[in-house]
Length: 367
Image 1 (cartoon, rainbow, N blue to C red):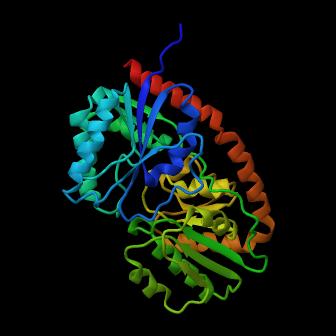
Image 2: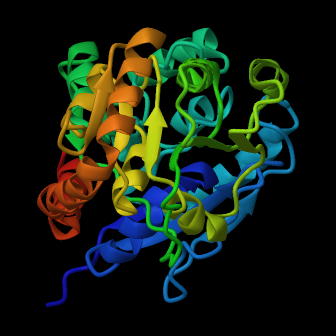
Image 3: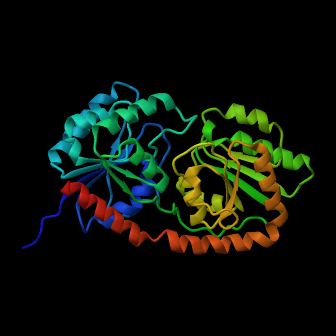
């Protein structure tokens, strides 16, 4: 007798597609999955190069911003459709602040929901941080099953709601394709990549870079690439500095491999955060990283082996670390790249991650 597959409705927002695009198609032999991709209004994100043509999600395009009450009707229609599928489990990583998740738990029994939560606690300085924390705490109190993407976040959610079900499976390496580009031989190029938010402390990096230039170091460049809602603030710090190149926009997926490959080091001067897709992106393209010493980076950055860490929120510490990197670059850079390759081969074994997914999904449907 053939066993009927359990039904899962899998809801992916466009901003986390890089995570689910790699995992969901590998689970369709085990589960009957209805995959829904929510495209947010005016985000500029595209699915190009991410979705396997053999198994595609059904796309659901939001016509309004998530804070617009007119979006309620769209959510209602989507949730009625999900309800009609009679899923055994709804996996959702779309937070839909402030309406979606409260509506979801009205339509779907809480024991049939697992939330793939990327930030158990909203990073300091993130948009709507206070209200987002209130929203998340409201949902965390009302559902029982959570998946997180770092061991640090696992400890946070266990402390927060110890008597609920918590599961861990790491973020994938972010693979946007290959590149034949190599970084320049005559300069050392640092890269800040991703959505520019206050808590990511780009200002710290710009000031450290300028300090290094003022100290007489000439063979360095800084490339800043990503979208920003408050670019004038950073532009005022940069002024007319010709060593800093900017590309302030949503970077298309197809451009990411060449962009990352054209640089030597990725810098993540964040003062807070849960985990970082940019860090995994650096490892995918074999680039050493410079990060703060915050807890969320410690499990994946081995200081002096896969990258370097500096004291959180200390421009002086960042400047000292960057100066050391520049001085030792010629000798250390090839060694760091080899170390990263070994680290990735040990820590990012996709077959093991898929087993984690299978196990926790089955566990969710048993309990």
